[in-house]
Amino acid sequence: KDYSATFSKKEVVGKKMIEQTMQLKMRRRPFSVYLKFAKPHKGREVIYVDGQNGGKLVAHGAGFQKILGTLKLKPTSKLVMRENRYPITQIGILRMLESVVERWEKQPTNTRVRYFPNAKLGKKSVRVIQVIHPRRTAGTPFHMTRLYIDNLTRLPIRVQQYGFPRKSGGQPPLIEEYSYSNLK
Image (cartoon, rainbow, N blue to C red; front, side, top):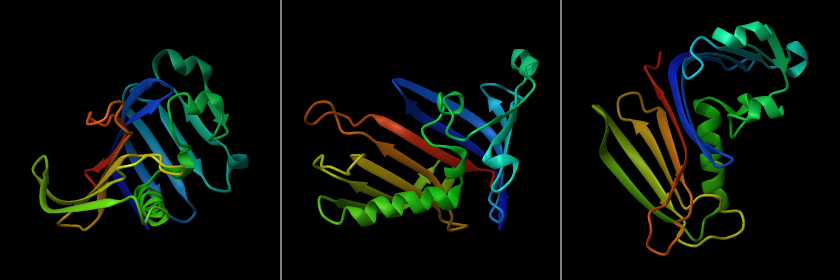
């Protein structure tokens, strides 16, 4: 129903790779998110509660940004989306898993699946499901997806999604990576 975690993300927004780490608190009903940034923008806080504040998130910065005071912003506003691929309404382990599975279900052909039951993520024992779409087709935004599942808790704790290689046989570029650690 609720959890807290360290949430780390790397994602290409426009042409830039954005990396952020923050403390996350989630509640399922009503859908609620609290973020406290550790890197960059240390001290920035963001709160979103479904059905509250006119559907807006509430944010206040740290350091120089503190001068702006508390801001209420649409989750899809240009200012918010400048550093994000997805709005805050899409954050969390459940929504991460739902979006990955939904994409996989839409692509039953043009798919190669590999399963690594005894992988490691740092010192953590995980299983990895890797799905590769060899050919670029309409509705196939990623060449490869890796979903990491903690072997102890059975919770999905990381997803990595890669674009199609620029050259045949080339390395696929990382487009987005979302990780949940220190889960409570």
